[in-house]
Image 1: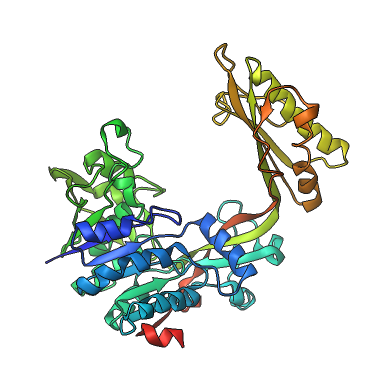
Image 2 (image 1 turned 90 degrees about the vertical axis):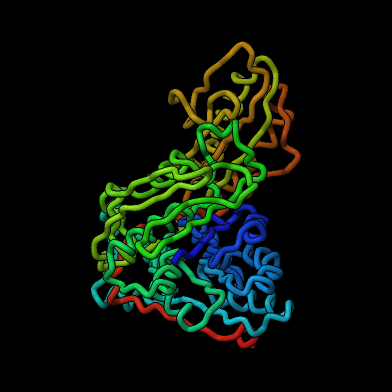
Length: 463
């Protein structure tokens, strides 16, 4: 027995057409859509602050509309996604309306929740959870009053429960990326949650496809030979022993080979002997990767140990304000002019009474985005070249005081008539002041988290 699990999204903002094109070009059992990252959770938390009905991956609405024909003609197709973000119930309601409009009110829609710890922080601390920062070892008390979101990375078990209850579409909040694949695999093969080697194998499969086209040629060092405009998104053909074949639909661009698979295998795993997920502790050092045909790579041999007793928690807190402004600087002395403009902006902010906590001057197009040497005025010294005729000056600032950043944004326009000649790119107006959300990685005991699963026909989610 083999099940085919494809992934059509690797982050919020990924190609909107990819999921539809994937299921049109290949018949699969499951389509996963992975939208969440630490930054994304912060953005969604900000949206929920403004609108209680927001806070989920709104791209999923357009993607679901595009998948309606496939849902009608491919009865085997199921969808598993973490599009719920920080508001999975609102996401389910929006999805249910789309299904109802397409005369698919009878489709069972499952929601996995319980990852949102924000309303329970005091309760959890009373129960002994310290929420210590994993990197700095600081106690949570330092930022407690500023917290805007706190979400545990749930595992695959509630996803499997939703599928067992008849869900054809499963919407989750924050779950571990690979768990979107592990849940369907456990459900289909009927394995136990202590079958660590099987869990390790399907976790590797989930890890390989979770970033979408990153395993099918995206970011590949030999990209020049690839058709990335029509890149195919990945499919994991998973066998009952937990091994898999990574492939993509026939006729699509990109490539699946040993190199692309290995590059993705090592992506964001930390210790390769202990890749910790909510489902299992995976040892990547035992994994074997072999090309068996064109665009078909077999991955096997993963081993696993019992899962950690804690969930990782993605916590975000308010950390001041920031803004970035850009100007086009041209002329044979553009580097010199850009350096002067950057200093003028920061000096005038300080003259107005605001010494900024952080600032950065960059020279895009003159090796300023990847700086070669530290410069003055909080910026970078670019590499100069006699052929340099234009660049983009970007000046950024962050401060706890909103008024300091607001004043910063007002110092770009005066350069139009009061700075060096050859300045352009100011027609968009003043830079936007935006709140900064900082990341606080921590853990919570699994015993203190209560995942919930609710499955009912789409029509009932509307009411």
